[in-house]
Length: 257
Ligand SMILES: C[S@@+](CC[C@H](N)C(=O)[O-])C[C@H]1O[C@@H](n2cnc3c(N)ncnc32)[C@H](O)[C@@H]1O
Image (tube, rainbow, N blue to C red; front, top):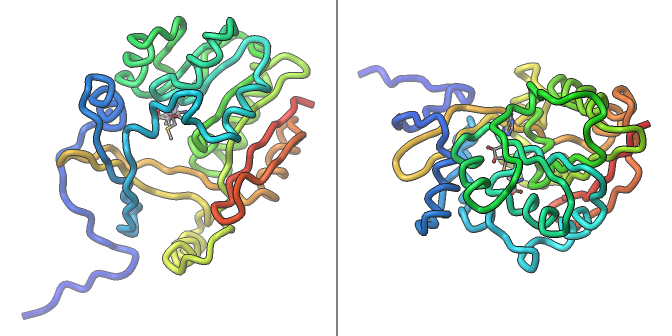
């Protein structure tokens, strides 16, 4: 019998029924009293476990760097990829006007049910706002990753430049993909390069309760590359604080030039 040859680049993923808004389902289930774990399966079959509770953190439970970034939010705020609305709600309770957007209809429904006053289903790649509407943009939970690719990041930063007022800012927490010694991750970065992809573009999907979400690309940037993307789109990294030495998370404030 001939064995089926599967190269490293053709890793088989489990066949599961596709649920288009599976991450939103995780958020909704948690909100309705059914917290749970879900999995992020990278396209090389590397799997990480995550928990719905992480997306419902209160101010006290939030990591210190996110509290610090939220303390810098001012003026009219746009929370991109707001999830359950936990960051939006903190600012709203302070009397700050916040618009929460998310591509997930279920996540936005949870935002509304939790009391977010302005929650909209909207894709970060197709933002519909008047120019110079916002003063601060939140991309928390490593949400610059939404950009997917360096080209996507360039487009997102350029669009945000038009949406914020002069003196406006982006507040983000960012993971630098180069800060790892994990051989599986290093091999994945090399595989991306071999395919002509940016090494920090992570192709993955959500798996939860026997279903899978659609494939999506999530971008982890080398800091130097992020600086270059900012410079090319009219942004300047004003503050950049390393959050913890091993995970290479940075709390970043980008200022509109
Ligand atoms: C890692 S979660 C972070 C959620 C929240 N900011 C937090 O820290 O708890 C990413 C969120 O971004 C949303 N998202 C992913 N791609 C998006 C896109 N293209 N446009 C808008 N939202 C998106 C997801 O639905 C999800 O709610």
